[in-house]
Image 1 (cartoon, rainbow, N blue to C red):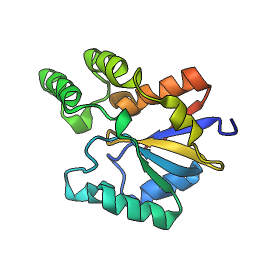
Image 2 (image 1 turned 30 degrees about the vertical axis):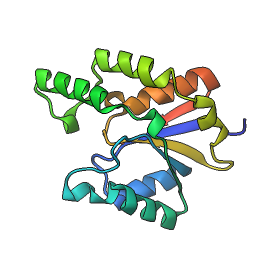
Image 3 (image 1 turned 90 degrees about the vertical axis):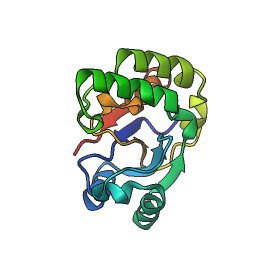
Length: 162
């Protein structure tokens, strides 16, 4: 296996220009979209809606792949939202995942996922980045995927932050 690193990146607190520049700075040549719903509310994040994002990535020379098998279900997302509500925090300001969400995501999604296919499809040059919406990887399931890839396949994880 030639690739030894994988990155993670979110949508929040980026604009498209800085997002693409960060991908380039970290040698990202493949973006793995692990969102279930590939849209983001708010005009400032319209660039991250699937069609616009794919067009921007293509222009920047970054391959796009959607990995719905790694996305949380609607039920799981609502479990996290309930915890956010209980704590009185907004989705955009969350800094950690609810323990119940992390446990269920790991058991229901991650343990059933074919992570070997992720590793087998990593780019020959550059690195791949797991992509979702949350700013902080600790507040997003992409960190769970990255940690599993690190543990099972020895990949070094780089979290790209705004």
